[in-house]
Image (cartoon, rainbow, N blue to C red; front, side, top):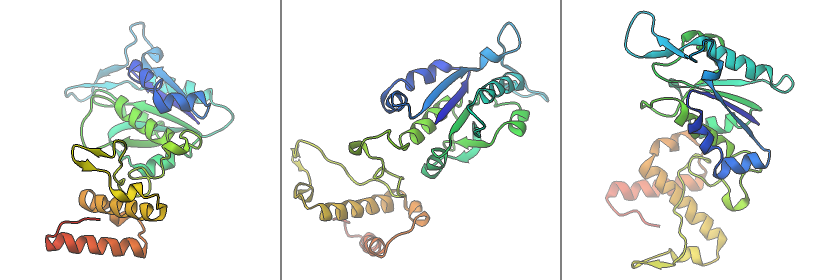
Length: 254
């Protein structure tokens, strides 16, 4: 996979992609990440990439010419005729989630454009953009942080990036549920012990316990997620008991 990012703050991303899983994915040649400074594509000697908004109003708007130049250069340099998916990071976009991460991870080439100020000239959206994505209903200074979030989320699920020990398949949201609790050494800490079942070596019972805990976590913290996934008959039975105990005021324990 190839990922390109167009930004006016390249150093924000350059540090992140040289650390942890993103660094490893690049070293394994699973993904190639290129950061492009939008100012390098400005058409004037002062490298100006923004201007006032027609019609008045506060704030500046990213100019179309530098963005078009940057995108056209990146697209013209792509290998073969593979499709490039061009994504604008904007509060107006579709909210990012794990399903979108899986979808994007199937692409060969992604190009992210980091919005800034009041946004980008509308002609960029009309002529270049294939997707508009937001990471939540709140305002950030620019699209750099959303780009980092999305890239990390999709790269970690590319085949070969994580080893078995770091498997993503049990992560929160990957299967539609929140994660189950995790414990490590010491077995006992400040009068609190690791659940005995996790020390038993009974893998079938441990798997069942983890599923129950994941369902409990999801019911208590993000019940909306339960409406979006297919639950087994056993899952439905567990949830029915959890809801019964919750509604009766009894403590929910497993």
